Image (cartoon, rainbow, N blue to C red):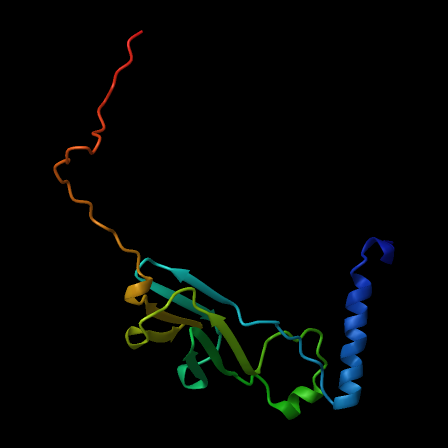
Length: 162
């Protein structure tokens, strides 16, 4: 027999189960685990900023994307997976799949050309691309060769003899 003290997280699992039971008794339903934030990736491809969000089961018509002062806000609804009345009668052992409203804001690292942006969702991945604004793109300054003027020291190769 293995003692409970060998698995210290068992106490936390037990406590979560008890809180879940209390929620069911008080509100007629099981508490639903929540995810702190909507997972997003933001990366720079050189000419554009890409923002991707993982939104399984969410369709385009259930999403809203707003942009203000360099902040992109994604909001929408995760689909309702179970009939609410039926779900109340279930005995839940684990409930982690999200349903209901969500919102996530992220600040873009550069100024972008909002008019050239686009967004699409496929296989649960929302992908938004934002072309960098001209002032955010790196610039190369060309250097011209000009004849040296009198008084301007020339760099010459020197060799050291040993």
